[in-house]
Length: 358
Image (cartoon, rainbow, N blue to C red; front, side, top):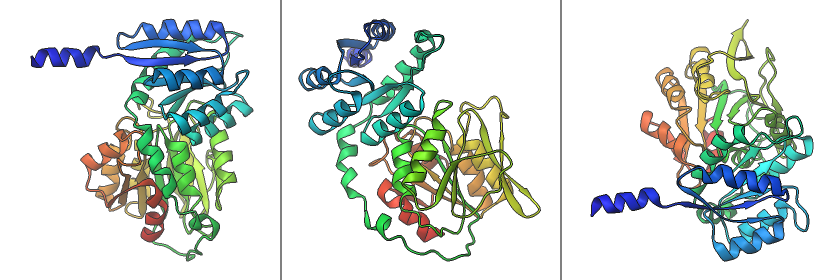
């Protein structure tokens, strides 16, 4: 009987609704997904209005949602889905200036993740997207969107309106943040609460496709009191600034003549992610030793756990986002299981906890 139960669990399929205004894309994505034994495409939709109605009626486990569509665009459909029938959504996005901005807006509205479906030579390269999309659908199917939405009202907006003035000196040289799935809205929640005169720099690794980190930095800069930018190689690291590691490159900290600098590069090539949270954390453990605060937020996998161990041995303080607000609890859980963290806090308390530690 136990074998029957286990077998049943293995064969339970993830029900997916595919939404795109292109018939070619709908067919291609459907064929791609149905090659996975545990995914079933239960229907398709050509516009946002149809997507909303089918989501209400069919209750899919995951929706793949295009942004630019007729009748009702993907952002409006996403907003309605999250309000009326919260469902995990993976956006299909194009890498353009407007596309990058819309993608980040979709993540803010509640989308779990996105896939870059940028055109290459006039045709979407479906084969290169298959593995990533199937992987992200499996992650999305595990996300309790309703639970996350229930915590969205707990943000203390007063911290954004009237930030506290921080002292001009601190025994903390840098604050480090690592995140992946669900990271952009989490970063916006945290950075919007950091006051203008924050006494140390913030270095951030966010797993994203190449090209999207510049849009992320611009968006975060508009909603933050401190300066937020995509990191530049050999740039001095300044207090009151936050630096986003550019996708496709590792970010390390170097010291020269007593000053800290950004070091961007491809090494180590064997790292699972580039940029890697582990690489940033480990470099900080060597350069800044214990004068660091490291924060690991929502994300899939274990990136950050090895680096957190190196930082902890150097005397740094480690924070992890709690399971209750993590879109995906993989990365924080891995850190909690690897080191004795100083604090496990829900997202809406992360900024306040950083301010207290600094």
